Length: 520
Image (cartoon, rainbow, N blue to C red):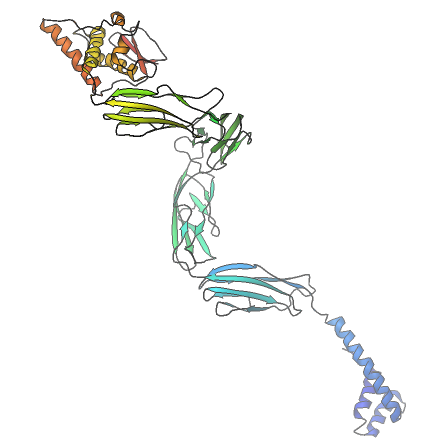
């Protein structure tokens, strides 16, 4: 700073007055050509001393103002593993001196050290607070938790299939008590599947395979095998329409054309109040009576819909049979019904004794296994039940069963020129009738019902007595093929119940030697 000449002279007089008045007087005379007595000197010094101090402080405030601002730190929480390093960054905001000095401190140097540049190093498990300060007292802190160094690393997927253009976030996890801020991701074939080094976001580039590796700061690694297929050009659902009861759930499943893929398929509903759906997975929940449309969309915008009809929950369930008698290996299809205006897509069947009578859980198809009694239970999604008692005879079939089945074969295909296959088809149709809930459950009952097999409808089941070898052989062949069918051999689907010289039912299964065998 610069002080005026006058003030400089006056201060000099005061300073030298003890040493010699002659020199002081000369100095003053030289500067001002005026002599000042001693009493005047004292007064002048006191006044000058006060004025100079104030002037210095004012000039210092003007040229070196007090630094202002608040300290900020890049993170306020951080978890590291033992031996791991991290760079904390600090900034000064609302300041008149952006480049002012910062000081760093660790509350527990045994757990965590920090350098003057903000570089921290985890030393041992525990907690420490790193603080950065300004000279004006402003500070900011980061709480650092130090855990054990990881002994291994896992990923949320060991393998995944994506469509071209699809992205997926690989997430890592460490054993309990371990920590690692730095986990780096790498791809061995980035032209097929690239990955963000920090974060693990995978992007499918083209069809092929790639291996994504995640690595901790201390060298622990884990890998995910990525298969990339073509982007789908359409999507399908396992149901295009569905009826549910209030409160019932159903899992809609999607499928894509062969050679394509989409890991991400999102589901939505047109009326969440009627039928809600999980956006990931397609689990539908029926809420109230009405209709709603569930839509599934792939990552690349391909859509498909399913119309949901929701009805009231059933208050009861009924079966087409309350009791049933079967021979061993006999079969029967139990069918359920519900009150009007109600629905239960799921009806689950179970047997009290599967060794006696086995039943398909979905559908109610019974197979008699051994002699005894079993109770078949049908249960709706909301717990309503109906039961059928099944008694199984030890005999797989009776002599009357054999006689009746051989007789219908003889009448329908008993000629010597008829093939074994045709005879088996005829006998199989009879058994399909027996095993269907819409016909009598005995062979005699099936073949003697009015209009079914011509002359047999009045119960006139008969096989002629024959003495000639040709007829005897033909009759014996009818018995052999009847026995084969009775012992469980099947040549037709259970839904084929029509046999005639013309087409019946919904469609033709097969045509053999002038006869059509048709679906129901």
